[in-house]
Image (cartoon, rainbow, N blue to C red; front, side):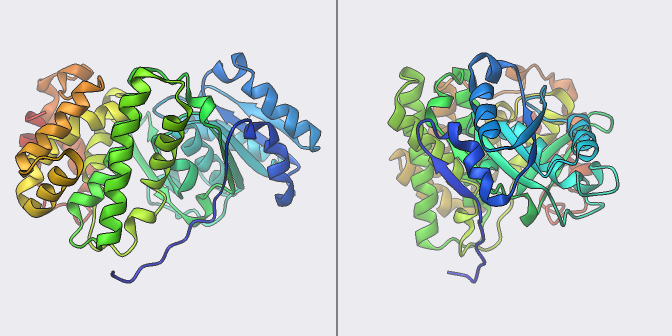
Length: 381
């Protein structure tokens, strides 16, 4: 293995009804006033909001709330949350939702302790070096944000989708009750599965070196996501399958897949962020379009790794068969695989390519992705 540093301070409370104790999980952190951040009113209609706030009240914790976070989160919501947090001097943020809500809460938590515009923290102008304590009640697994230090958010005005990675953004406690995810729709389950898989595949295929232990760990996550997604599409109330899917999705981006790895990138995410920034495509749906085309294009750059993927994940022999098997699985779970399926015209290819190139032109990926290459890759989707 190559040298590495592993740091993940998030405490996970996993199990049935654990959301009912969220207030007690905050007590060791001396929380007195919290801002609750959530998406739609479903958490109120289901009673989850009331159960969480009951626990807060029983533990002497005051709360305010900010709803309406979009499935593709935007900086305007975060700015509103920062304003509320500062004006009311809250000392913690509680995210009740999935990755979009958690990422918005991370930007709010960091922005509350920053004097400028929170977009500065997401656009490389200022590194977040402090944040309010963050707590999570997870309602949809995909991004891994409940157990990592990253946040990604869009700017409606500039049509950018950027973010940050900072140790201050780790949640202090994440509550995960698999039962809360039994009502996730089939299409969003499919998008979530592709998102979790992409966190593994970006690294697996681009890394110059992966130790055997980590490679096998990544493959186990992938096989678990595929197996449990197939089960859950037919039986959404299967608690054990849901539990394994959720834990696999968390492991896919909590740092464990990078242990001892050298030279990896997150190519498909950088490409997809332009789709969701420009056209408000659900992130997982965009990745479903990008991944098979990118894999087919990239395959020759790491032939042996793709052959291993084919054998160990799908039981086929060649790299080409492995890529086709993955694409067939994506189609089988109901996710899109073409630009047309996410309502993007092929006339937009030049615009998208220019947008991606603008995002990555200062990165090490520039040589790998010249503008014409991006156009060719997008044209194959």
